[in-house]
Length: 377
Image 1 (cartoon, rainbow, N blue to C red):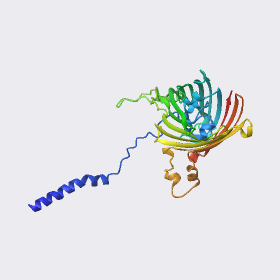
Image 2 (tube, one colour):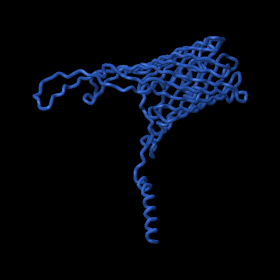
Image 3 (cartoon, rainbow, N blue to C red):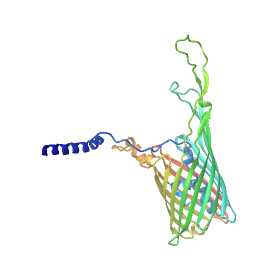
Image 4 (tube, one colour):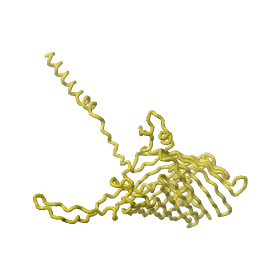
C-alpha cells in the first residue's frame, strides 16, 4: 500500500513538472506586434521651422506662433498678431524638405485660422536594376506634398483647441497616391508658483491610408498555354497590379512645458513629451529654451535651444552599430535624437522678424540642418 501511494505521488509530481520542462525547452515567441516601418507618408513627421526642430516634438506644449499649424493647432489661438514662416530642411541623401505657413488671429484674438504646406523629395535620380546595375538611362523623381487648413479658438482664459484638415499627395516615380487626414490639439495654460505652465494633447495624421496607382503598376501578363495543346503565339495581356493602402504615421502626444524663469526680458522653459506612434513603440522628448528679449534696451533678442528625442526603433540596440568594438559608426549612432540650435529676432512695434537655425542628428546618417524665417506684423 505504501509503495503504491509513493508511486502515485512520484507520477503526479512528474506530470506536474512536465509542462514547465517542455516550456523551458521551447524558444520564447515574441508577441510584439508593433508594425515597424509599416506606414507611408513619413515626410509628415519632418517638422516645421527651426525652433520646433531644435526643441523636438515636446515643442507642442509651448508653441504659440505660426508653427502651431504643424505642432499643435490649439497653439494658434495664442497668437497675438499675424505671422508667416518659411523654412527649408537640408535632409539626408541629398533630399530636401520645405515648410511654409501663414496664420491670422481674429475675433478680438480669441480665434485664429491658418494655412500650411510642406513638400519633400528629389529629382532626376538614375534608375538601377538587377539587369542594369550601372543604370538603364532612365531617371525618376519623388514629390511628396501636404496642405492643411487650421482653425483654433480660445474657449476660456486657460483652454484652447484647434483642428486641421489635410490633403496629402505622394508621387513616387510613376506611382502616385492621395488621401486626407486630420490633426486635433488642445492646450491648457495656467500659472504654477507665479510662473506659466502649459499642457498639450495632440493627435496627428489621423486618416485613411495611401493607396497607389499609376503607370508604374501597369504590367504585361503572359498568356497561359493550355496543357496538352499545341503552342500558339499569343501577345501578352495588359494588366494592373493591385495595391493595399498603407496607413499614415498617426501619433498621439501628451506634452508639458514650464517656465523656470519668467521675467519681462528673460525666459527659461523646460519641456517634456510622451508620444505613442502607430509605427513604433512609445517614445519621449525632453527639451529646453532660453530666450533673452530686448538685449540692452535694443529691439534685438536671441534664444538658445536643445532637446533629446527617444524612439524605440532607434535606441542603439543594433549590435552592428553599438557592438563591443567601438567604431565611428557607433559614435554617430549615440547622437541619434539630439537636436539644438538658436535664433535671432528683431521687434519694433508690431513688426517682428526672426531668423532661426537647428541641427538634428540622425544617427549613422549624420547631422541635418534646418533654417527658417518668421515675419510678424
